[in-house]
Amino acid sequence: MNKLCELHEQGVAEPSKCREFNSHASLFLDRLEGMGAVEMADRMMELLGGCSPKDFSPCDNRLSTKGALERLLQRVREKMEKSI
Image (cartoon, rainbow, N blue to C red; front, side, top):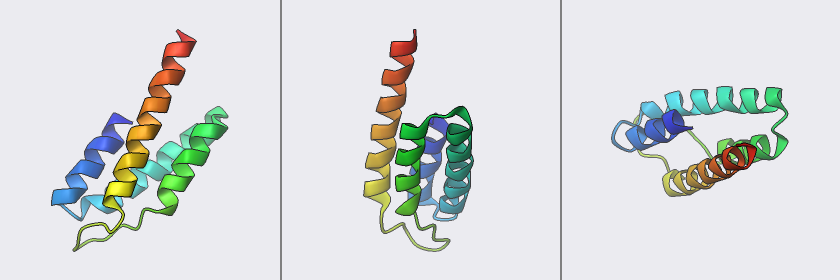
């Protein structure tokens, strides 16, 4: 999750990082589905649904995606705390 957040922030200054973010987010979605984390996978799929990588211009949905990432990260933290 932290890597995804970092990549997303880098994409603001380097639009080519958007594709890298999208690729990593897709792999993370696959892992979530493999773990049976359906709720988290659904949220990740929603995030990817609004993610439209661009190579030469800033993302139109940058703020929305950032907010979705922050909410997902918070939910992951909450789940981890409950499992400890």
